[in-house]
Length: 283
Image 1 (cartoon, rainbow, N blue to C red):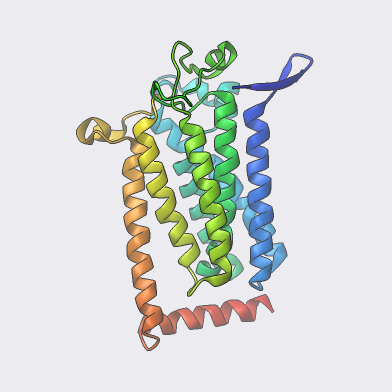
Image 2 (cartoon, rainbow, N blue to C red):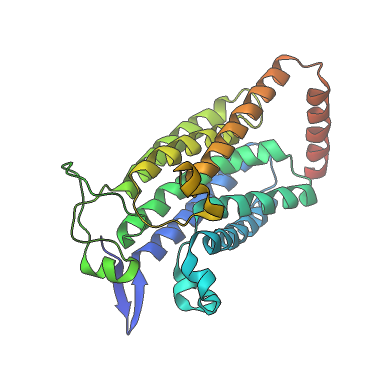
């Protein structure tokens, strides 16, 4: 609704950028706090968080290349200010951050599931602030609605993002933002009470997938058609990714729960050895 906070000369300070910075800062602070509580080395977690942040930024841009035809049609836009200032695709950022995180956790000898559990609430609070930024900028807009909370964006928002201004729209950004705030509070509560390592991050994957899949039905911004799958299925790219991540998270969650209930299983023994090696390295 307010794409610009103020200007320094001719340079605009965009609301989206401020919220994105808040998202990154809060995600890192929450992750370090929870990791320290779990006995993980603070310095390593700071390093890990910064590299995952970079991986997330790169991943979000890469997936945007597949979902935004204008960038594929005009490769020179990849080095334009518009491309650098655009937020990218969240799922691409999540996948990029996870890949970088996995490689660095192995390098630092950090226990994968325990460290991922510490990261999950931080990602959720990052979702909250990030979508507030989307709402301020006008991107990721919803379909027209007659509901009393429908919103109408400004001319400046239209100039920056192309959001329609001739109708009241679903505040799809706020739907996701406040849903993820609730997920963050739940994950924070769960982190102290989890029954096994991996429970927090797997529930984040499951819950975010359900939230994102549902909200996509009221989104109306153009999001591409990778390999014609949207035309074939009627589902957006994010919905298709949500199905994969949601089902995968649920399956692994069930497997790890059963493994916990059967402590003599080979998987459980391997996990104990991994955690012992990680604790030895941390010392």
